[in-house]
Length: 122
Length: 122
DNA sequence: ATTAAACGACTACGCATGTAAACACTGGAT
DNA sequence: ATCCAGTGTTTACATGCGTAGTCGTTTAAT
Image (cartoon, rainbow over all chains, first blue to last red; front, side, top):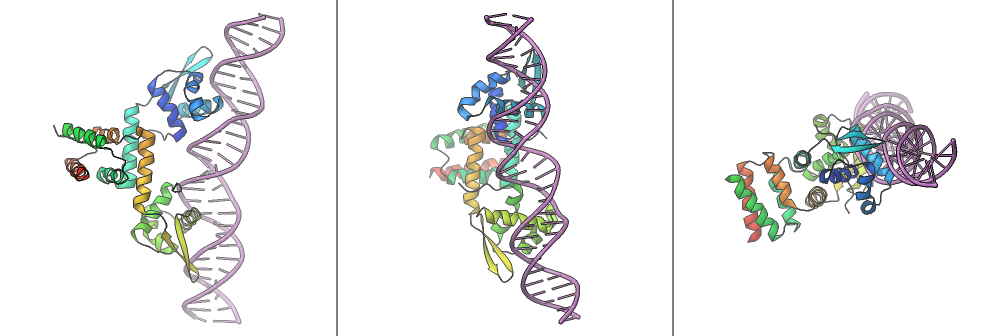
C-alpha cells in the first residue's frame, strides 16, 4: 500500500532516486528547464510527497533535505503489478503481445527478454 | 491521442467490449453488483465516455444504445506504450524484469512469453 | 385518463492533481 | 542596522474523477 504517486510527483521522485538527499532548489534545478515548471510547483510537489511519507525531510539550517523513503524498485514493482492486474487480468503475456503488435519490441528487446527468461529458469 | 479513460470508466468499457451495443441499464446489470455502483453512477460514466467520443450513442426509442468507438486492442496498446514509456523509459525488458523479481511470472508465463517471442522472430 | 416506472439530462460535492501566486521568515551582504 | 534573495507554508483555482441525487419527460399499465 505504497501511497499513490501522481505523474508529476513521479518526475520528482526520479530525480531523488538518482541522487539524494537534495534541497528543493537542487531538485528544481534538475527539472525546471526540462518540464517547464516553476520553483513553486516543485516545492508543492515535494511537500505533497513528504505529506504522503514517500519522501523524508531533514532540516539543514533553514532548508530541508529530501530523501526517498520508498525504493525505486519496490515502487516500480508495485505499480507494474497493479497495471498488469487492471488491464491484463494479471497476465504478463498479453501485455508483451500488445507491445509486440505495436512494434514496440525491437530485435534487441527480444534478445534481452529471452536472455532474461533463460536466467529465470536457471 | 485516444482520450484518457479513468479506472471506473474502463470497467464500463470492458463490458461493452465484451458485448455491444447495450443500453445503460444493460451495462449496469453487468457491473452494479460486482462494483457496488448505483445505476446513476453507471449512467454518469456512460455519458462521460460518450462525451469523450470513446462511446458512440444511437437512439432506440427513448433509450440509448452504447457502442465502443475505440478497439480494445488499440486502447490497450496505447496505454501499455504510455506506461512503459513513463516508467521504464520505453524499455520493456526492465518491466519484465520487475515482474519477474516480484515472482509475478509463473513457469507457465515464461513458457508463453518464450513461445510468443519465437513467433515474433519467425 | 392517471399514475408509476424508466430514462436521459443536469447538478452536486469532496478529493486528487497540475500549476502556481502570495506570504512570512531568515540569514548573509552591505 | 537594513535589506534582499532564498526558503518553507498557506492559499488558490481549474479540471478530472468517483459517486450519486434530482428533475423533467415519456411510456406502459391500470
